[in-house]
Image 1 (cartoon, rainbow, N blue to C red):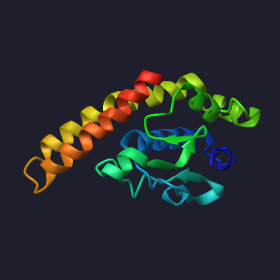
Image 2 (cartoon, rainbow, N blue to C red; image 1 turned 180 degrees about the vertical axis):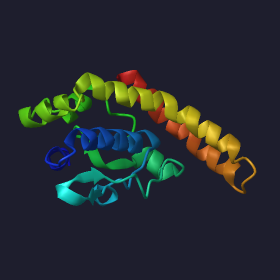
Image 3 (spheres, rainbow, N blue to C red; image 1 turned 90 degrees about the vertical axis):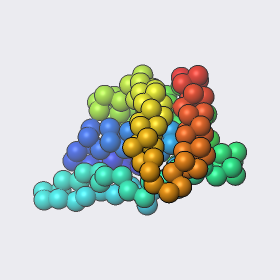
Length: 164
């Protein structure tokens, strides 16, 4: 994916968007975020921009996926929720591929920048989810979903922050 996005006319933007998207999917425990869940919008003059996220859903509300769930697309070789640390981030940012490292660095996405993005998401997503659940408190079934999902996402985020 990174090589494909690096070849687009809007490489820096697309690499930044994709990094935020795949890290977000990791933080929320989205096991179905595979390549078909990312699209390029093709425009005039050969422009290609990554489309907005779609078909995003956490699997962490299910006990089986909390224990065995994995990302469909690994981050630096790691696809287990709560296990993406500095080594996986460095690999994602191109540690083992100088071409990827060069395009990621040009896009402002060296290993430290990627680590910072993941850390910000891991810090902000649980709070944003909690606020969303508060706003939706009158919906049927929301309390059960909150009880199942929020602690599991919080756990992934805490474990991630602990290894970053």
